[in-house]
Each structure stands twice: as structure tokens, then as C-alpha cells.
Image (cartoon, rainbow, N blue to C red; front, top):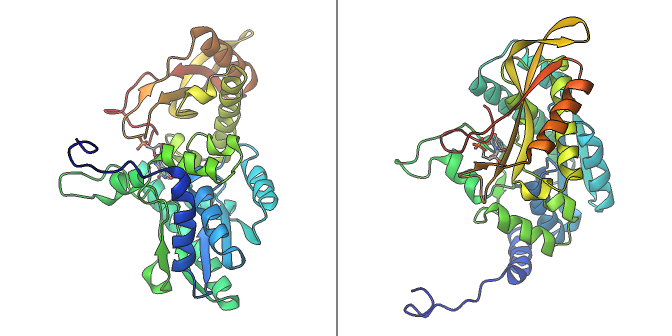
Length: 331
Ligand code: XMP
């Protein structure tokens, strides 16, 4: 219908989109003013940062907030990556204690998201004000993609808000102009664009990771010890999936920590420990998802390895829920 009857040309391609976006961003920021951006190490913010960097390399200011809710080794990896990619102004803010302190005793998912969002804004705003004093920053770039707008912005009266704030914006008083180069793209298009931009493949094909981090995969209170249990289990799960060639077939895989304990037996002793739930889904755009049909023997190896190696976990479950009605994340 589109091509034959409406006679629309097939003239849209990712190859053309790359220079078009870079030049659009160059024009948008042509006044020589600075562009501020928070990066997470995820695909969306990385692709956005590379576009903004190509458009305006000297005036891009990147900030990474370490909220203490990242996976094992992640902050280190991100630091190395950004150094290697040659970004001129890149800074890591260690705000771990701040976030974990504010999350103490908090169990409610929306409350966690609210606290994380607010703390992020507080930390980022402080940095933004300090940077603004030194350099003339006028823009705020964000890695918002199309599904983010659908799920959190309530695009119409009919669509209800599922979870609060996928991406956070700075308060209006900062007077920064928001720039969102990826706002019309789906995740697979962002990845294709990332490859066109020459971003390393393993970064482009990394599974998505939510802004509120492990806090929304820990049901119940977030504590240092529960974070440790989850991190260790997640690391085993992901590295086994990679080893067995399953990782790239899956949209997103992760471990979650349930808010109940179960009885088990280790040697001659009774244990009363945490339950790890493994979630792996296939999807095209995260709007709907199916549980991944990981082979039983792979699941068995992962479960054994987690129970044998992670102190504080004595039971592993595999989540077989579809989205909808379940969501991909647990909170
Ligand atoms: P759900 O759980 O809503 O997730 O099925 C859909 C996709 O969005 C990711 N997600 C988030 N990403 N901040 C993010 O940056 C968030 O607050 C957030 N919540 C969910 C989730 O990982 C999945 O890919």
C-alpha cells in the first residue's frame, strides 16, 4: 500500500540517518555552547554521546553517576571504555553512599524509583551547576528512545502509566535545552546506528539495564549484603549464558532477589537463605516479551553454580512469565 498505491519511495536507511543526525545535532548546538549529558554505559546513552561527540567534540561534558546499584565491575569497565573512546570531558561521580543511605528501610518499588530519581537529580544537578560555572553549558542531551516515551510519558489518555520515570530530566530552573537525538528510534534501530558509528559490538549488543539498577531487581530492602548476593548470582548467570552461546539470542537476562527466604540443606546443616529468580526474555522492543527457552542442562549448570558459589543463596527459580501480564523487570 505504501510503496505501490501511495508511491512512497524506500529512501530511508540507517546509513543516511547517521550523517543526518550528526549534522542535525551540529546545527542544533552550533552556537558553541556546551552540551551536558549523563551516561550510564548502556547502549542508548552511549550512542547519543557518540553522536553528540561527532557533532561537537570539544563542548560535550559527560557525567556518570555511580549510584552503587550497578553490577560487578561495571563502573570500572565504563571508565575504561569512555577513556578509550576519546571523550574529552568525562567524569565519574561516586554517589554510592548517598543512594544506599536513602534507600535504607525502603521496600516499596515506586518509592525506590522515586528516591533513586530524586537522588540522581540532586547529584547531577550539583555537578551541572559546578560545570556551568566553568563552561557555558546550554544543552542537556538525553538517550531517550521511542519506547521510553510510550511507557512513561502517557502519550494518550488511553495509555496508562506503567512505571514512573524511565529517564530523568533536570529541573526547568536550570534552563537547559533538552536534546534527544534518538527519540524516534526503537532499540534495534539504535543498535544498528551504534554499529554504523563504530561502537564495539559487545557494547551495542549488550542487554538493556534499567536506570534504577539492581534496586528494582531486589524485591524488598536494598542492603550491601543483598546487593552482593544478587551481583554474584547475576555474574554467574550472564557469564554462563555467554559461554554457552545463549546470550546473543536473548533480549535481556538477569537475576533477581526475592523478598522471602527458604529452607535448604548444605552438608549436614539446615540453611535458611535467599531465593534467586532468573529471568531471561526474548523480545523485539521490550513492549512485549516471551520467556527464553534456555536448555534445561544449561539452567541446571547455572543453578548448581549459583548455589555452590554464592553465599546466602540456596534456591534458584526460572521465571516463565510473559509480558504482558508480567513486566520484564520485577519492580
Ligand atoms: P518493563 O519492566 O517495564 O521493562 O517490562 C521494559 C524495558 O525497560 C527497561 N526498564 C527501564 N529502563 N529505567 C530504564 O532506563 C527504568 O526505570 C526502567 N524500568 C524498566 C527494562 O529493563 C526493559 O528492558
